[in-house]
Image (tube, rainbow, N blue to C red):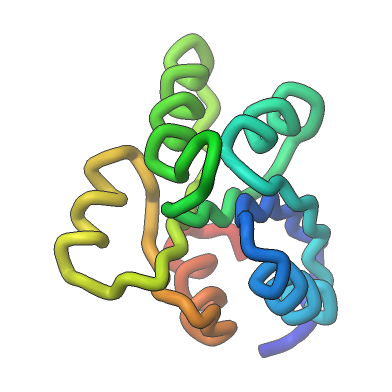
Length: 129
């Protein structure tokens, strides 16, 4: 994996500080620009003021979980031609979780702990890099 030619801006929506730091450090060294939201409501507020190339969305969070947040983002997009790629993150690795994430409007799904190689594969599949 090489450093990105063009920076990719990522909104990381994650309530666990340790996971935030781990993902931030892993992605920063490859040229990603990362903004962090601690829950879905905060993510929606950030999306009102900033543009991102990708959202990494934890599923289980207080205040507003990842599925609710994804539905809200997709609702906003109905009035535009925009589509913000969303990759769900979860500690649960059941096959049904992936289908559930996709049915709620996520573009891809990853299990925790965060796997950098899988992340890059997903970005290529979603034509982000």
